[in-house]
Length: 379
Image (tube, rainbow, N blue to C red; front, side, top):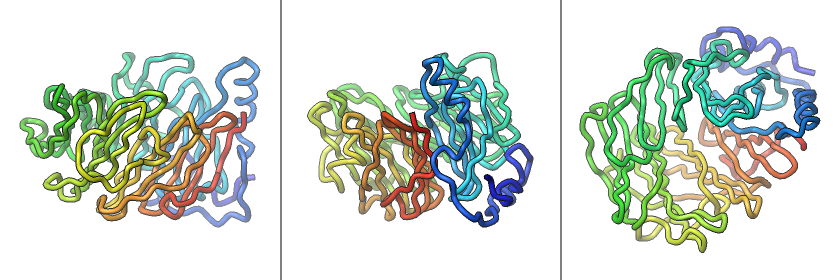
């Protein structure tokens, strides 16, 4: 049974201020476990018709207590750190990413269940109802909103900006052969460019893409794909090497001074993927779970997290730096094929994982050193 404090928490479909949204719920007398008694009928329907079971695909938290997780046809939420969960949405949308800058306004990349193409959808009631913003699919692979109207959308080659809540988008000029971009403001942004036969080039703009300055080159004979993440002067980029035998080679580079100097933090070479991009010493020879890199979170001025997963070994883990990459540590792993993280401060975060028999939502209070299951769909 949901606690009175949770039920009184402004309602997921009620417009409240960010300050109200961040207010802690009243203490609960006890914490539930497992699937918390929600979405059981939907899970049975999925099983009866031979469809994929309910699994988490995305998670987004405003603070350690308040956030949401979503997957194929559902959104759930908690306001007391996972002691209790509510069903927020059940319907046609299969969510790939959710993004909530506050407790009311949200966006998602989602497909109609069973479909392949992605749409950008929006909610103004905390996730209870969703509206498609256009009839056409989008090419976005990632979205990021800084408030109820301003946001960015990214695919591998391009970056886009909206100031009207996603109704219209403006393409931001990026260099030719961009394979990853990230903007902290409309004027300040980063891009990783591939130069075939040469390697990766990390570039920065301070004038909204009108001009770009090259700050770092990383040698690699066959560059393909990169991700870049920035927050103020902290910048990190994941540069992909080759893949094979369920293994991925990659390097993680970081900068604490807006790109003036760089540290090679992870250089993971694999038998199947070959050498990691770049050269020189690295802080770690293996990334989280010694597997493929997932999403990254840059928190505050000095902290960053990366999730990694190794499907063949059924391992998912996270890695952390709390000093701008001068030191890096990988956590113990949990059982799973893949995972996605949402950290709200240097210690507290959430991890959504899928494995053979379940999909589980974990929480940590020690920066990922240990994880505690808070919600689980059993198959």
